[in-house]
Length: 477
Ligand code: 4AD
Ligand code: MG
Picture 1 (cartoon, rainbow, N blue to C red):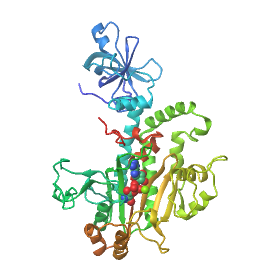
Picture 2 (picture 1 turned 45 degrees about the horizontal axis):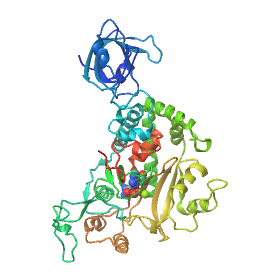
Picture 3 (picture 1 turned 120 degrees about the vertical axis):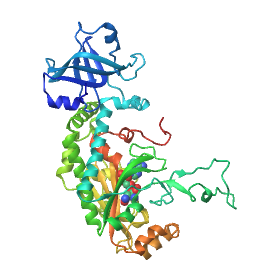
Picture 4 (picture 1 turned 90 degrees about the vertical axis):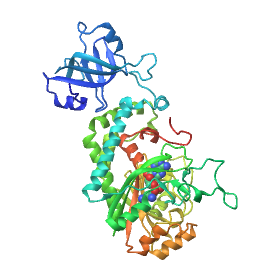
């Protein structure tokens, strides 16, 4: 018999029909009641295995984690907490899970413990909810850009260029350490490698997206990016997915408008399509909050926080205006910032970003026009020649979620900036060609997908919102 997914079954409520579900046992109570989950929803369906119908050998195998198939009649449930249940006629056990050894039991496990058994964590309600939301957000993003006529461009993962100019790249090589050919001055000659030049994993698909935008007008990338920065924080991954739209004939205004509209679209989509998962995560967070001191508790429940983001315009201000606010502020009565903002030109730390969003404005913030000296080479120089037309979007609980800019479309200015930062115009001639032939004003941004999922799920650690986290010291299994 064809199986029905539990989500569809709970939605249909058509009692009296024979149904088949397949999934994993979440609990087996009173020797009769089997709760099954198949990952289609955070909910379980209950199947009743009448005592006179199944032998002890079958019952013994109905342990938490076992893979089972149940065929039976869908009936109205007498029990609390569910409207329908299945009266089992047939039980197939596909795979046992030895209760002495299976690490997931029907109780609350700490996040630290779940990270240790991360290969099994998809089978918990929390991670089920997180990764269904992640899926929905990815789908929403494609839908958003597709509806606007953007072309999805697959940017390469292996590349010869450092898009951010920050030197945080993972090198890609096929050489064995001791067998690599050397140059005259004794360094490894990467030009003799399989790729014919020094290559890395991409830090951003932006430069390739720019090539696309100057032909298709509007493009976006959505793919994995890599950063070899040794930051062991709850906001950084060594491998993360990024969404990078690039729009031609556009400036900062259009870029900010697009980003704000996109972020709200994703939030709205998740609220509409992942209501059960958001509700589950909200309850979980509220439980967790109870054990925290008052000052550390989140000011808003998850759903309210998401709705608040939809209902409010993001605050837009320049870096210079933000610095003025920060200079005259203290994060609280006693404490100063760990990194006091003394001078114009200093980069903002996450404590500053979060102060602006969470304490000062209490809304998402778009900061623009940063000092040129702290931003990447490709950002367009403003008339003041001190600042660039950059924009960072800062979110409550997250800090920077989006980073973007107008691009320097003037050939000479761009070339000059590259030279000043030791980026070889010859090596990057393919990129400079966009400015040599048919250049135009254009802009774009990158959304860190994992940070978006942190916001949507209310989770506190970025390792918990990507299926297989890669962080310093953790290359996974
Ligand atoms: O600000 P970033 O470095 O900007 C770029 O890469 C540009 N090329 C984007 C563009 O204009 N097309 O990164 C963009 C976003 C950040 O705002 C942040 O959300 C996320 O990517 N991000 C990270 N997320 C997780 N772990 C890391 N190590 C991240 N680094 C950046
Ligand atoms: Mg940035």
